[in-house]
Image (tube, rainbow, N blue to C red):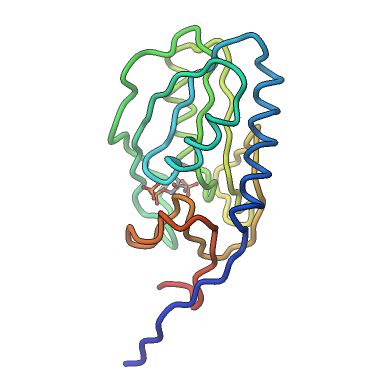
Amino acid sequence: MKSSKPQLQVLFSRAQIAERVAALGAAISRDFAGQHVVLIGVLKGAAIFMSDLARALTIDASFDFVGAASYGKGSKSSGEVQLTKDLDRSVSGENVILVEDILDTGFTLSFLRRMVLLHEPKTLRVAALLDKPSRRIEPFTADYLGFTIEDRFVVGYGLDHNERYRNLPDICIIDPMPE
Ligand code: PRP
């Protein structure tokens, strides 16, 4: 059996990411000037994006995290998502920003948006670092978006392949694409 070591090719450098994250932070700070926001990070991929985005805000922010597992991803997209970690406290009446690393089929964020709306927040926005619109099954649009990408397998800056590569500072394409 042939096994070639995957090569990593930088798609977005740490400098490009920092520039986009700063712009997103500025836009959120403008839109919510003088107000408090609750950032809700989706574990685990969004952890690094959220920590940088939070520091790009000039407004007051608090943190929470949720976990979601989706089943039948890839070729068998059932769309079934389960909450593996709930919010620590209600976000009723809050300005909520769901923070996600990548928007793919749209199942995870659609599910989480419905879940957060049950709390009756004052406002709910979504910040996604990456969007793969060609993979979308459930329509979904992020309010704050870093980059739109083609259907390539990307790792780094929080994104993994079998839990590896999350700590890479750049976003890289893995070639060949993993099975
Ligand atoms: C990834 C990503 C999103 C979700 C996007 O999470 O972080 O949460 O998939 O896919 P969707 O739009 O098709 O629902 P994953 O389940 O790989 O977990 P991770 O964040 O821990 O890597």
